[in-house]
Length: 302
Ligand code: ADP
Image (cartoon, rainbow, N blue to C red):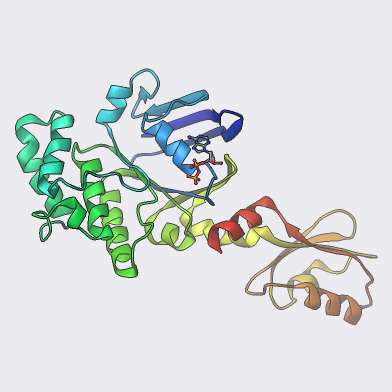
């Protein structure tokens, strides 16, 4: 396991930013922490990267405890913080050499810096100062510094925020390539980004994990939130309910109640109402189920 997070809680003053969060990440996974602003994503990442102590719980990176063995963790972990803090007056190469020095790479520094410049596509720009670079290139410098000591785990906090569409595509493709070799955990509030880059997603809201699934199941999860709870005076044939246009699935609930899932149709209520009228049923209840996952998705994907 590259990462084990066990019951991690973080309280800032009176604000609970993380509430008993647990998950594990295997080597080679590219995991997205998806959630609206304030969900607790940055806090989680800072704790994993040893930048912030947790209030309770345990985090193990590559077998080392972040609280007890932070130096061992930092050797194996690269971190690109949100807003990518960089020394703008430094030249790209100078900065990367400096970071390599901090990691104690010694004689390997020069070769490693050149390797990072090539890997992150900085070759055309490396002679400039960081302040003279576009946002996309600065992001590459941030990724290069996070990778310089060849860590097993890479933590990227909102790596594509503020990039234009071309830069976005380039950085996503770079992260995909890096993900072939490393364990990557990135945070985002963009669902498309998860689908483009990650093979697993953890949806976070208000400091809690709402869902944890392979990216392929993201849409299914999303649809699972869009359910209607209906109750008739007597139970109709479930197959007939399933045959209504726009219905993805129906699950019986209670005596004459059903949970109806939609697909491709935003509001199934008119169709259910017509079904009841056409088949002689009286509709006793019909409520759109706004479960918390649906709310998170709304906030995340709006
Ligand atoms: P996200 O990265 O998902 O936007 P954060 O981890 O930045 O979320 O924030 C989670 C919650 O913790 C928010 O409500 C935020 O206001 C609060 N928070 C974050 N950092 C601090 C801090 N240093 N002091 C107090 N509250 C904080």
